[in-house]
Length: 93
Image (cartoon, rainbow, N blue to C red; front, side):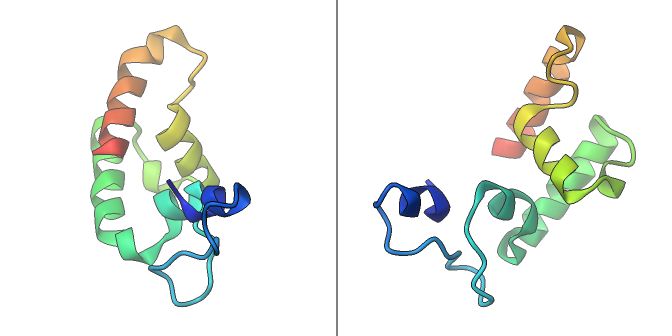
């Protein structure tokens, strides 16, 4: 339940991340791959991604990180279903 969504539906008075001092919008992208408050957890997640699923994951763009963590790697490929399930579990953990 992020502020960008709750603000757009009238359930919050702001869409700004309460963890950031520089007035960043608390969107899904910000929460998962940008917010400095979660940098330690993100580093652990990115290390797991690189070691277990996608070599060179850290070298991908921020948007690609987000796409993979939320939707999986090649989400239309049925052969990736198990790996994508594991990616999702790691992201949610």
